[in-house]
Image (cartoon, rainbow, N blue to C red; front, side):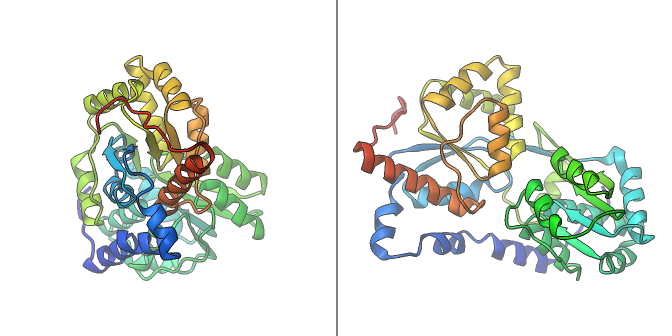
Amino acid sequence: MPCIRYTDQYMITLLTATNISKITRRYLSSQSAERSCSILSLAGMRIVVTGSRRATELAHLISNFGGTPKIIATVGFEINQRVSKEIEDFINKIVEKKIDYIIFMTGPGVYLLMSAARCLGLEKILVEALNQITIIICRSFKSKYALADHGIKTDIIPQDNTAEGIARALNNYSVYNKNVAILWPGSDSSVLRQELLKSGAQVVECSIYTYSHELKEDAAKVLKTMGFNYKSPHQAKVVEFIEEITKGFFDAITFTSPPAVFEFFKIAEQYHLKESLQQSLNQDIIVVAVGPSTEKALAENRVKVDVMPKVYKMGPMVKALSDYVIQTKANKGKIQSKSNFPI
């Protein structure tokens, strides 16, 4: 997509919001004795990091606890060039003030919508129209920061940063006979759609990019501009990692999004490794999910989650894994490494 550029201020805001040291301080700075006990609780453990967009940050957090992270980039990112008419129609409905509520699921989605509007010569009008919409909902702070960079307010961010969390937050509002727009990322949620329809809303949807096994060049530029140190997936390496998992080379695995789960198992199935992978994850490895939607994606692939944080973010997720390991040691004595691979 042409005409893509962004301001340095947004990059600064985003990087500040995801700053690793701040995340670590927020969730680890209790009493010094507790911190000393937990900070190396993952020592000697080899931990798989799936996903792509913030895998490097998560790996850094794991290292802070003494663990040895290994990144498997599983999610690619592809801009939907062929749905430009769909995007244009979506923008026009906003500009023509036919939308009462709008839901933004991701930061990149906001970025690409604004880039498309800029190319159509409608960016200024779109910003004005968005600021006149009754309610703007962002799934997480990343979407909020992207909107704020354009001077657009956010009214609601659900405590549970999932489609289900958005549906629950909207229970406090009347959407009956209202036009509710949703800008989806590479996947959508039938739960959110059905809840809105059940409440009598008219749902307007648009998907501006999709997930894939590879990172397209135009999508890579988008993520780089947004400040993400993105790891591009390589299918052969994913297969190699899956084989190592089934051989017991790792102690834990983290999943931070449903697409990371689905793409991971899609590759495993393609290479006839899904059954052995499921068995290894259910019997030999600590499985960690960042939140309920990711846990649900794993359940759909018949994998039980061992650890999930109360706050659905990366920092609390690593802390929850640390607490799980410490508690297991307290109950059963010293944890023996599950991996057969020399650390």
